[in-house]
Amino acid sequence: MINNHFIEGLKRTFPLFIGVIPFGLAYGISAKTAGLNLFQTVLMSLIVFAGAAQFIAIEMMKLKSWIIAILITTLVINLRHILMSLSLKPFLSKYPKMLTLAIAFGIIDETFAVSSLYFTEKKEGYISFLFSSAVLMYFGWVGSSFLGYVLGEQIQDPLKWGLDFAMPATFIGILIPQVRSRNIMNTVVSSAITATILKLILNNPIFILFGAIIGAFVGYKSERSGL
Amino acid sequence: MIDKVIIIIIGMGIVTYITRSIMLSLDFKITKNCQVFLSYIPFSILSALIFPCILVPGKELNTTLSNHYLIAGIISIFIALISKKAVVTVIFGVTIMIFIKALSL
Image 1: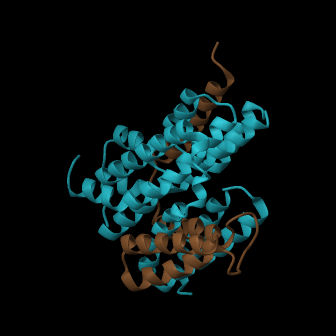
Image 2: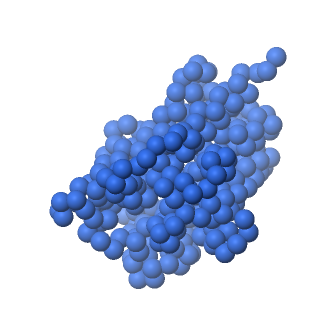
Image 3: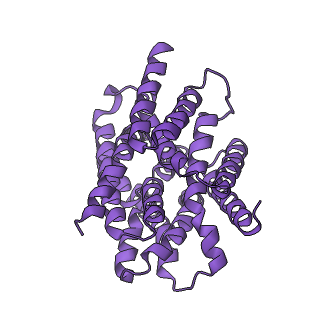
């Protein structure tokens, strides 16, 4: 498991590891404010490992929402993972199924972003890359959730430091140099427009899923018909 | 008696894991056409993660200079175009962001 791809996974994920820390801290603080105890706060990060869904679940718990409402919201927010794992499927099909089902737990926005582009670049999937990327993000997320809870009010709004920009900046750094064809350009532009408009209308992270589907469809159409 | 929060956490964990694993657990062939579509997913997902984040930092569209994310985002795009390296983009991007925040305080 420890090979060049494992090391490369750690390297390429590192900026995202830094970028997730302010979000984990903010989650820990918000869970504490909502009245969760330390065990519950860390357990959620350990078991769910999904930033946006955890933030919204905490807000819904504060409002005393029904359990089923929280679970449906979680499902809706996380539907984009279906698209991510589907897109990784061709790269992972050469590995034993049990192994891919274990690694599936680690498919989050950040690990998907670095892995899918790495696999596309190498024209081959490497589970050790996805694994090291996921382990690093898991430590970052769980660790900073814990610290956020423990430090609590002592840290002033971690999302205002500017460090939270590490996440979009890394995504920009891995996407922009890859926009080498008109098809990819069409994909990126249509996804950006769709997602931005839907974020304004829906105010729910599901805009990522819709933007991604429309963008990939435009890319497909443009490759097939030479738009 | 397990408390409500633990039930929510376990339920969320199951729901989330299903979204991550269902496509890998099912056995099916991906057609050629579908594969072309899927090959664009990494680019479209990244785009959907980046642009709403920098154009709509809160709940409203903000294309003015008061939007720090947009300014730092545009500069980062140029840095990415020139350097072609994610690491360089992050280091410069975050530094610029911290700088902008410090200036506007």
